[in-house]
Length: 299
Image 1 (cartoon, rainbow, N blue to C red):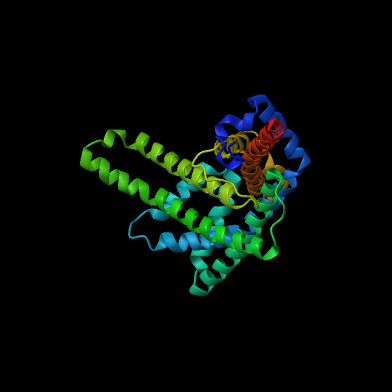
Image 2 (cartoon, one colour; image 1 turned 90 degrees about the vertical axis):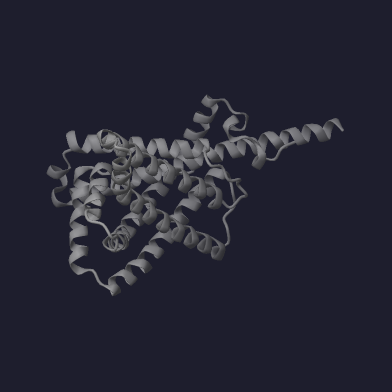
């Protein structure tokens, strides 16, 4: 019989879609993944400024005009207004105080926060997959390696999103398709975001659990995480911009509150996708064990 690693994840481990939804909902409550999402939000806030420092340092070295302006445009589209305003102020402050010492400190803080961030994710995924905890040294090593990879992937993704419009304008000019520029650029940005999110979630779901999980380019969990994150971004942005009264309630802290909420929901979407894959993995494992037991009995 095939092992759980060889089972087609799109068969849901033998579960029906409704069974998968019920087990996922029960697992979210049983494993207290909302608490892990809160930890994710905290360590994301801790790593925010260092990542901004590294991103701005990289963008400043791009040999093209308007790169930072494109970066602002990306943030404005992805974040609620209050959260974007907070980050824009941080970017302006970083630009006026940037130095080599600040960049080195940013790398160290980003690595520490990233390590703790992915350690939190790993603990949540271990609960989802029913896996034992790794040894402390192994957990730290895996977390810091994935943190380094995630920081590099994030910087590359941001660079592509900043550079992409310039390259597309040049290419469309050669092809004499300037009339389609706006719609094509929009699809290019969305494609870059979706591909990077699928790659990053697939990598996390493969490497972080303390069990042997096969690599899948696209899995039900990664699709769940990406789709829910995109819906969260748009939904939260719409709600805060048109219905939220955070400025009246929190005053100058409104941007921090909205950003924390955005990070919390982002962590929740990532853990939800991992839980979906974990439910499928455990169902497939249980089904294979029952099949093996039945075969042994018949023999």
